[in-house]
Length: 302
Image (cartoon, rainbow, N blue to C red):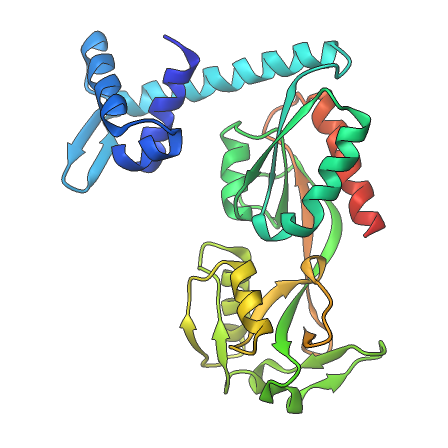
């Protein structure tokens, strides 16, 4: 059996649908379906149950896929150790970062690392923080920037900076009449209770901004309006910049504009910790550790 076939089975289990799995693997659905049929025939055991709504693993399938994940993780670690022994003269590092945060910070991180280690390829995986944690646990990433606290990773994560959640609003939006100056010149804060009379543009529940934004409103027992409830963070900010509503963003993702205000939420602000996370286990590749140094350096400079 080839390693790529392990990846096929794991992807089928994660997607629960042959068509979606094939799309993710960049292969034809018929080819993936044929692979699964042939593989099950060779084993003499059904690994997946087919239903009108998709597929799900049998008990034997769950056990087999669990072993496949373990073998893939050991295989990746073996490659990383070999690359480390080559003094970073070759190799690959899988680095996870959210698309929104990556738009501003990722190019600088990649440039800094490439200048120092031009022969090491950094494979970027763009997902939201919750998904990145899952990928780390599954051994599919060498390093990632995640929002803390994490739910599945503990000692593998270290805090490296604070970030602030801000509200994005166009300078001509009626909310501006409710803002208050902070002690920093040119900066303002707003009470959430003054925002709910206006429309929000929200990211999905499976994102940090989407879930934390809603949690902040719920904790103050506020009722809000949002005709857009599953917009990506970059798109929500872009729409807010045009005066179409209010959107949440991070301080680290702010792009200054004369037509836009970034408002602190409440007088004290709302902050969270960013962490640098590794997959579970004691081994960390030299390449991942060197990339971590570049990440910290870029964030300090910016």
